[in-house]
Image (tube, rainbow, N blue to C red; front, side, top):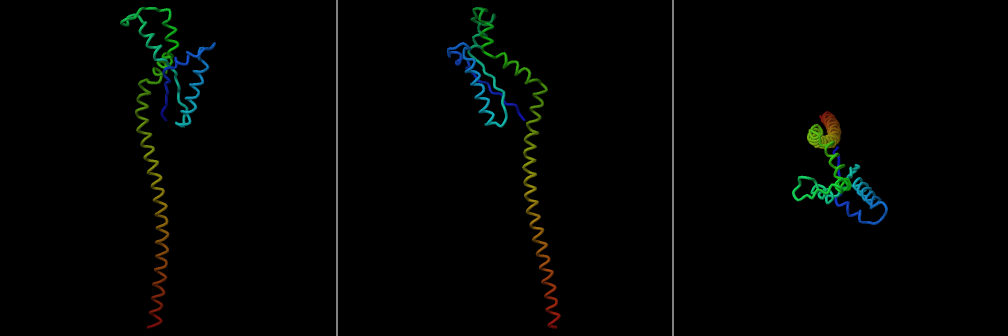
Length: 160
């Protein structure tokens, strides 16, 4: 079964809500909502990662060596932490290893083949039931035909 990952972007919009937690409670409610409703839709619990593309881009632009960066490193780590791109990168690095890519590529065709084989099995079972009915009908016809031949033979003997 494939793993589903949902990335919620623009999570920084929720920080604008005033409060002591800087929108953390609202962010968690959003993640829980997406996870719950996606689970209902997909039939499996997805991994939900909230990110802020704006904060990640701002952090990147402030890095030394980036064209136009002003190297204000005091906010750099705070921006990166708020963006949550570190969690996304860590997840992708851990998940998209060479062996997992091969496993995914091989398991998908195998899953498709398994589905096709199950459909074929159900069709064969359905056809077997039809054939069983046909065999029972043929046996009944053979029995009736033999009884008819026996009666016909006796009828000709009585006349003759």
